[in-house]
Length: 542
Ligand code: GLN
Image (tube, rainbow, N blue to C red; front, top):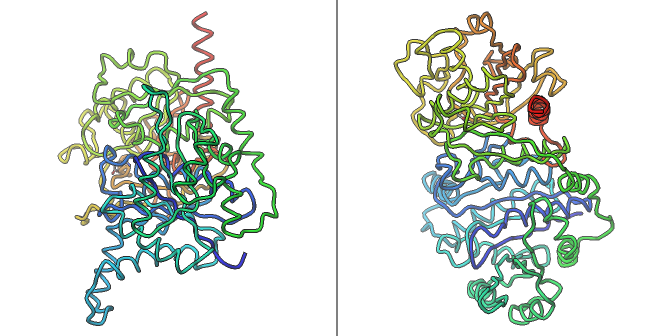
């Protein structure tokens, strides 16, 4: 296809309607018909990226291969499409303004007054077209964060209006809204959708397709009514009904004909039949698994499960490929103590200690690692989770009672986890961690080697602290080994206890690269170990 097509996805009525999932599902369907598709998220906040945001604000910070700290929706894009995203796939208002102001300081505007229109809108348009310009993609889907009517979203919608005008039939707008069901009157209500489309029209944008989130089936008269009031074809009014799993949405959208109407409007030839065999295979495994394996996740943001989005999804992928359902118990690490840990993890088949920053919940994570280690329970520690495993081993096995990470105790006599050398002079917080994918060499016959069946891997990082190599000989003599090493820097990337049933700590984040079609080998092996542990527990209980 010679020219890139652009699809803009906006949202109205309420936030959290799942624009990311709808965008990812549409992308999946277009990809299944042979198109090269990418998705971009434009976020209307002033942070330059979400790396500095507390997970309670915005959920997990997702990290791309090229080291961008991004919105968690990019995780959905990668999990659905099975292709990598990059810095260019997530742009915030903060970054747009930063770029424009940097240009102004350089004198690029030649004395002109710098304004929202055209300078900010031009920068937004440049960022949207950037993904299409390299001729790598047939379709670019741009999801506009926020809800139509927000002051913050206005420059984005204005940029969409201008682009639609410039690109003609090569651009369409899909507007996602909510059709609430009023229990008292037993009715589905379309008025909020009408108002939301009106708000879009007031700023000059006519949506081409409406996707209506609903709890109940929308009868054809309701769709016709929405079509009439909102100037869209009635077949372009698509319902998106609540489903059990986000992975069912592409199939539902296909049943509704979303891909066909999009291709028709964008004049993309419909030569290829959609290829969704593997996807449907996954769905059938997901729906037919009978037995359940239970994972306990110790973390400090458990009140907001979105803070652990990629970990949760990676566990679901791995359990599904093992023909199991997974029950993930999120346990607040602040509440875990040496006394109650056995009770908290009662009935759990494997334990995961989550990533994190700072003191809160740290000692609870230590108690959790000790419990998993001493009771031979399959254990996976990710990033801070690995650092906890190292500190716990130092304190309780190597008898370095005051061992700690310099992050938690600056004055520890045994800093088994220390600030990385190149982090020591860094004062800025944004975008300054060790970020993105790095190579790691694995030791033969370790848990991690057995999982990947390869001795060289690449995984994504996001941290400032590292295993202190001065202590490595002591650890290896004492029974904890470094099973993965960065070949360029000698950094210890993974640790294991070979005498333990299944124990693995990883400094990187394997959860970011688990996708529906490529479940992650570490999570597959972790779930396998959990299933084995369950079988042993069940036999012992008989
Ligand atoms: N706080 C730790 C560090 O910066 C771990 C970070 C993480 O878990 N992502 O090294």
